[in-house]
Amino acid sequence: MIKLKYRPRAVFADFHKRQQRWAVVVAHRRAGKTVACINDLIVKAATENKPNGRYAYVAPYHSQAKSIAWDYLLRFSEPVLRRSNQSELWVELINGAKIRLYGADNPDSLRGLYMDGVILDEFADMRPKVWGEIIRPLLADRNGWAVFIGTPKGHNNFWEIYKRGEKDAGWFVKTLRASQTGLLHTDELADAAKMMDENQYLQEFECDFESAIVGAFYGKEMRMLTDQGRVRAIEHDPDFKVFTSWDLGFSDSTAIWFWQVVHGEIRHLDYHASNGHGVDYYANLIIDKGKENGWEYDTHWLPHDARAKTLSSNKSIIEQLSDKIPLKFFKIVPSLSVQDGIQATRLALKRMWFDFKCEEGIECLRQYQREWDDDKRMFKDKPRHDWTSHGADAMRMCAIAWNEAAKAIPKDDSIRGIVVGNNDVSLDEMWKNTQQTSNKRI
Image (cartoon, rainbow, N blue to C red; front, side, top):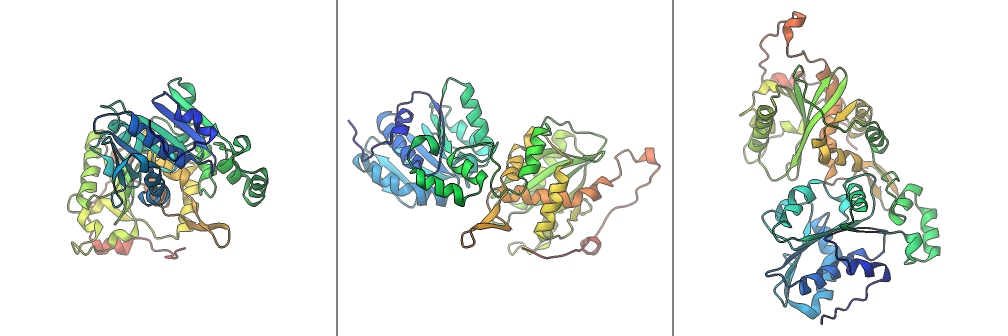
């Protein structure tokens, strides 16, 4: 019989006894969910006795997994611990099972593995593809289980998982609100309610999915977009060309939106974000998507830093892209301050429609938030840099460029009697003709 140095809180007793393969727990702050999850992993890894058992705890960031969960994993696994590796954040139990900590900020580190059980902590802060594209397939061949746990952040992927679980008897579903659990003293909750914004308090302590995401730039616009049904299946209109808008990640993700402007509507057909790839990868991605979908491109809108030369090649990003795609298809987005770009995005979102394939990009826009100032106890105007930044920045490029894109000549030029001449341009001509406005940064 295994005896861990862990005494579960009463509110987690039924969670540890569950028999369902899938579970979702919505828990208020300081409920003890990380401790409960780590001990649940240890017990199951030690008792399920699967050959070469593999279990994972996944936090939004690798550094977060290390700082929050590693000490708990070492401490509570001690009675059944064989060895550990701090640099790789794993422990091996006496039965040969391994438990490892991962960050969803590097989901590719999970590819090619198999898993018998996974805890996804603070799932609301993870990009949607982490579950469907990466983790779910890892559980398939060994009938692995998964637990989604966290605090609400509006109607995002965590909300969708929660609603799915509510409708399915094969799921374990539990909501832990601070007003009901009794884990935090009523005086402490009253004081927190006084010092916090109402939406913030309801979200963090009362597990309210309906509260606006605190500090979100586009909360109102994204709620309106959802309520009006502007996320739906969208067909490519062959009478209009396709544009792309980019955010370039030199050390992290590159994000690309694919869109058309049709009679004043900005229709987003697809979205892509990935990291760890060279410029050739994205050039081929653009070419392949065009061929697969029958798209004819007009302009690829790039941020101003596409002109910067890389040390490895001594060529700018736009020069490298033009090795595969003719230079005439590229333009640099006029330089605006981030705040002006955000305001432009708010206005543009009112006329935008999104295909379901844009799920991850939509989530970026919903969760794109202001940075918090601990000293002043208030949100800054400056955006917080996280996984949502790249998709939101690429959308700013679209919002700034779409008016010019709307003036583009339809593919069937003959109906207007317009003759289009040679559109070949040089790099020097591109820089000269790119509108230059304020370079102010916040």
